Amino acid sequence: MALRLAAGVPKSLTVPTSARIALFNGTGPFWVQYGANAALPNADVLTGAAPELAPAARNVQGIGSLGLIAPADCTVSIGFYG
Image (tube, rainbow, N blue to C red; front, side, top):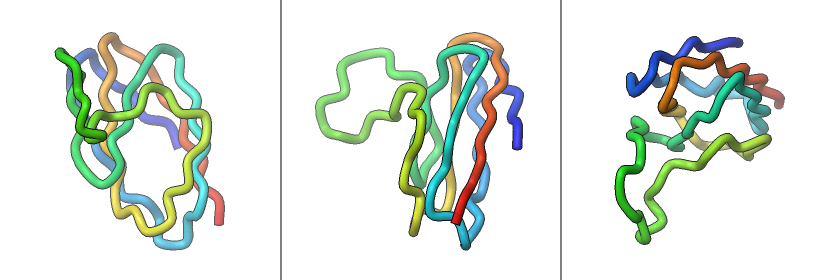
């Protein structure tokens, strides 16, 4: 699947129940929050709750949704595999 992200506008999507792994690629930098909506970090986040910057791959088993956000317009491709 491909998601078009507008600068600073969060999007969320449901992880397929059969998915174990997600592979990501983007035309620009993007952030992913697992199980919640994403927000662009604008200060230090030292609690472990920050979104992850442009992961290449991630185990998504048991995660219900992904929140994505980007600082500039970009397209993110996500492949789910079981």
